Image (cartoon, rainbow over all chains, first blue to last red; front, side):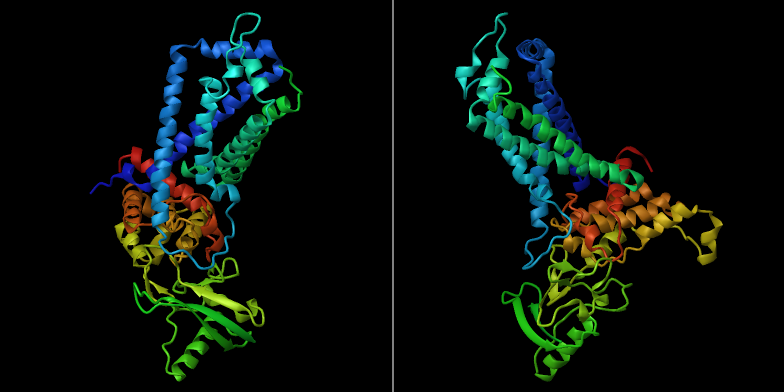
Length: 224
Length: 248
């Protein structure tokens, strides 16, 4: 008798972990890219133009990210439905011992972040939500992404939205990173402490790296 | 000492009138919690009422029969301790002690605080064994096993199958239990032979029984009376990934 290993819940968890790892790596790269705004208009607009100039590669990466995101969300929905069904009657009293706020809020931060991604695309990729910042060009005739970026974040509401999203993604990635290392079977024995520390390290890096940019614009530390 | 018990009463599976009932009790602080329940039951029987059903066997922390959620924590307030090893001195004078059964779909309530844990037996029947005759006790020494390996296997073998991990898990996942069994056998040469087949069968049975999946909250490790480490879950995951790519 053979078993269908790919249909087990652990296989779904591994799918979740691998797609999640891809998304965490993308988030870190995305964050590092946008820290270049501190380098000024020339550096940032050059970076933006380089990315836009990748053509087919750009579209392949976009399609890949969308695919990974869909796989991640689908596995997450299936697993959380199953988890809910496993305890039809809740405890009248349950004192949790170990779990964290960000660990318990994975579904919430995930859904919040999904909504944010739609807004973020409409803001910087499609230029729908704040078109007044979107269509400017710089002195070399390139799209002035730097100006759009900095002027956008001088609006407190936009900055607050991005700060909220930074917090959500940082909370999500904190639990996710340590979690996926266990799901992939790496977090045990002498590696366990390092794997458990990796989550908070990634989370803090994402929060600091993402939040400092809109904050710097709002506080006029970066000028358009 | 006077305490107030608040106990889940349920007259059989699917009892629509199930709910909590309060029972005051004059107990002794040196009694174990289960002895206090014995005393309460003696009083209930004297009054012609139905005694509270709860599971217990060895009462020395090694069998895994006792299974109470005490004040919101499976096996109660002491870490690395079974319910039967909890004494009344853990509680305050006049305290309300809430007792609930393990709650999980694969562990249906039979009566009051007793749940049916045969789902664990079915997982074990699916693969938690060594098929060959491993011999009698002296034969264990025929294959030399290094001390660190033996110790590590024993840490996982310490699992008594009480089900507290499932009771504590926000997802009612059985992965600490299954992980302990899979890791224990996969580490030792006698168990290695069937490791690929074993993990697939046990995980498949675990899913069929309706347990949830692990979301790495660590609640299971926190309540486990035998301190089974979350390493068991990492090793279970690793064994399953290995089984997906390696032929037996």
